[in-house]
Length: 133
Length: 124
Image 1: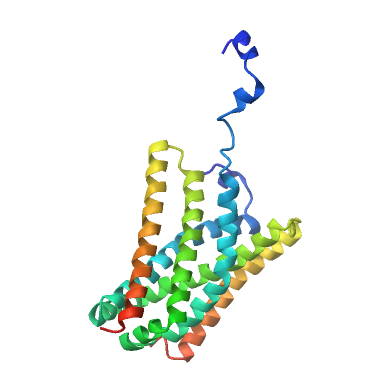
Image 2: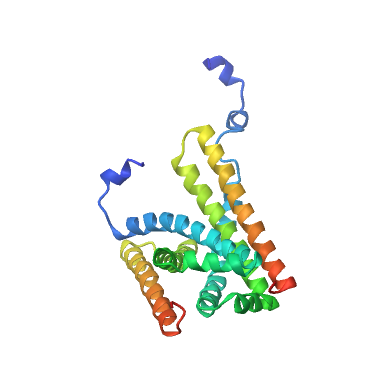
C-alpha cells in the first residue's frame, strides 16, 4: 500500500476487521462457568459411579429411573461436554495452523460433542421413562 | 509441536499446563464412555452386559483409573484457575505449590476412590 493512499484511511478503517473478533470473552466465560458448575456434578458423579460400579442391569436401570439421578446425570454429561468442547477447541486452534485441517477438526469436535450429548441424554431419558426392558 | 518445549527448563507449572491439556483428551474419552454406558443401558441387558465386560476388563479398569486421575486433576486445576481469575496465586512460589497440590490431589483422590471401590466390592 502506498503512503498517499493510506493517508486517506482513518485509523478506525484500517483496524476494522483485524485483531480480536470480540468472541473471546464469551468463550472464556463459558469455559470458567462450566468448569465451576461441573465441580459439584463431578463429585456427585464419582459418588454415583462408586454405587453403580458393581450393580447389574436391573439395579442400574432402577437407579436412572429416579428423577434426581436422571437429571443430574444428564446435567453432568451436558455441562461436561460443553466444557470439553470449548477446551478441545482451544487446543485445536492453538496447534493446528492449516486452515482446512483446523476447520475440519473444529467441526469434528462440534459434531462429536453434540452427538455424544444427544445420544447420552436420549438414552438416559429413555431408561428413566420406560424403565428396564 | 511448539518450539518452546525444547527450549524451556521443565518445571511444575509447565507440567501442570501440559497435563491439563492431556486431561482434556482423557475426559473427552470419559464423556464418550459415560454416554456409551447410558446408550448400552437403554439398549437392553445384553448390550449392557457387553459394555460392562469391556469396561470392566483389566485394560478397561486401567483406562478408567487414568480417567479418574485426570478428572480429579482437572477439577483441582479449574479451582486453581478460578483463583487466578480473581487475581490470586500468581507468585512463582504459590503457583508451584498449587500446581503440586493439583497433581497430588488428582493421584490421591483417584487412589482413595478406587480403594473405596475395592472395599465396597465394586471392582469384582
